[in-house]
Every structure is written in structure tokens, then in C-alpha cells.
Image (cartoon, rainbow, N blue to C red):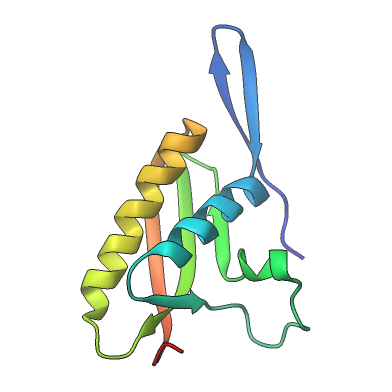
Length: 119
């Protein structure tokens, strides 16, 4: 079972706490909208996932150090340049997570688990 991480940011009016699940939802949404991404790659051997779980399957968020470290596994469309698609995913995820949460992102690791033709 994955442990739940809560990441906090202090403001002049108080503290804002964001759960790793909320950040995973942002990452999943952004990655799934990137050109060339057919889907997110969940962990093998898991039971059938609920629709909400599909968006966060294969995403890990860690808040230690100076900022967030995010790892995600994706499936890329066959025939595209894998390095370019992964680079786009990396930069869009980092930008959107920082924009929406105000928390700094220090690393985004993109694993390409499969290559498929889109439907």
C-alpha cells in the first residue's frame, strides 16, 4: 500500500496542505492530455482499476528535499519520437504542478512502459 504524503506551503495567512493524491490527479490529467501519450501505465498485477484510479496509476509523488519529485509511467503512440514526447510530458507536468499547487518541482521522471497504436 502506498503511503499518503501531505505537502505544505506557508503563506502570510496560514498554511496550505496538498495531498500526494491531489498532486497525482493533476499529473495524470496533464500527462494524459499531452500529444503522443496514449495512456498511463498502471502497475501490473493490480485488480481492475476504478475510473478515478486509472488517472493516477503508475504515478508516484515524493515531497522530501527542496521540492516535489514525481515519477510517472506512460504509454506512447507508435511512430513518434519517444524522447520528444517524454520531454514534453516532463516540462508540462512540472509547469502545471507548480502553477496549480505553488509547490516547487525538483524532478519529473518519465518512464515509457509501452508503445502502442492509438485507437
